[in-house]
Image 1: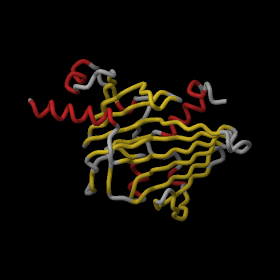
Image 2: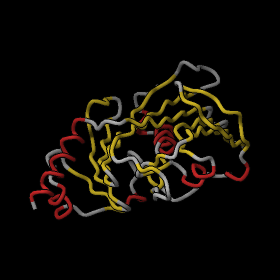
Image 3: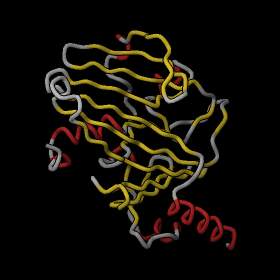
Image 4: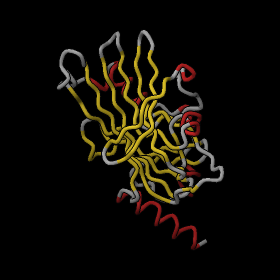
Length: 229
């Protein structure tokens, strides 16, 4: 069932739902200086008939130092293998090779892309949630030891539920900035059900304090090279 998933419409839906970001500015909040975030998605095809028919994807591994982001995009089905590396700063990104570790050289030799046009891994957007004004607030809940605020949006075609973790700490990116600000936190989970296709997609953002090993080497090396100038 899932062998050719990355080539069909279901996988594209997973990626889109699982990684919609908007750039985040700092307004009188605590800014996280460094860390990472894993974007993980579970997809259920024929969800109402076979809830065990699930596939899990590690969509993107974002590592940040200040406003600089190193994105590691795993190979589909092989999360230990990295298929693409992107350096992201403000509204630009640079696609890097495996041996491109000196950032100044990457910026000289690689043509930057507009981050809002990036179509793989973590996808950035300025748009807000569709039908956001028609949302309905739900009671708070606890998942994995964390308390979340929630709201839902129900339409004839889709049902979506959003989970917001209350916090004053912001990251260099956020999911759906307007909603996050309205609820005083950051969206860390989205559950979406496509009623027509009977496809359920669950996305999770998992923040972490530590960098991936590759990101640690990248940031430390470039920090050292910058100090040598």
